[in-house]
Image (cartoon, rainbow, N blue to C red; front, side):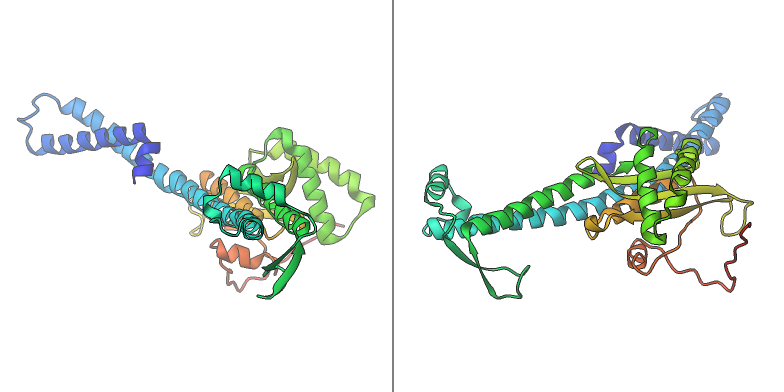
Length: 319
C-alpha cells in the first residue's frame, strides 16, 4: 500500500477528493438544507467523481497490479542471480583467505590483508574445495589459477544474466531486423532449414512487422551483449463477442523462443510476463497458445491451463 501511494501520489489524492465529493453528495441528498441551491453543481461533481473512481479502480486492476506482478517476478530472478554471484565471490575469497591469511576473518578483510594475499599468491599452489557443480559433496582439487578462473567466469556469467533482466523490453520499429532474425532462426530450429524460401520469408516478415508491429502485434526481447537472445510475439484479435470474450478481444502468443545456449536462465519467463501485461493493456479477455512439451511447464507455472474441448482443430490448406 505504501509503495502504491508513493508511486501514485497525485492519483491517490484525486481519488480521496473524489470520495469526499461522493460522500458530500449523499449527505446533500438526505439533508438538502446543509447545502442549499447546490443541486446542479453537486450532481455534476458527483458524476465526475464516480467516473474517476471507476477509472482509478480499472487502473489498479488492469495496469498497476499486473505490472507489479511482473516486477516481483523479475525481482525473484534477479535475487537468485545475486545469490549465485555472491556465492562465486565468497567462494573465491574464502579459499584465498584460508590459504594465505588463515588467522583473518574473511568478513573483516582489510586493505593490508588483500595486499598480503596478492603478494603471496602463487598460481601453482593447490586448493581443496567441495564443489557441488562438479562432484556431489566430494573434495575437488584446483590450482589457485584454476580456482580463480572458475570463479571469475562464474561472476562474469551471472553479471551478464543480471544485465539481461535490465535489457528485457518491448520491440520498437527500429528493432524489426532483430525480430526477423529471431523468427527465422526459430522457424529453422523447429521446422528445419528451407533455404529455397529463406529470402521470401525474410521479405514477407519485414512487410508484416512494418504493417502490424505495435498495432495489433507486439513483441518482447531479451538482449545480452547487444544480441537479442530470447523473444515472443503477441497477436491481439477481435472477433464477434461471445460469453468467453464479451468484448470480442483475445490474444495469442507465438514464437516464444530462446537460443539454446541462453536457456534455463529465466529469459522466456521474462518475455512471457511482458507479453501478458501487453495483452491485458489491450483488453484481451484471455490469451491462448500452443505449448510444446518443453514449454508446457513454464506456461503452467505462469497460470496457463490446458483447455478441455470436444472440438477438433482442423486446417484447410490452399494448393
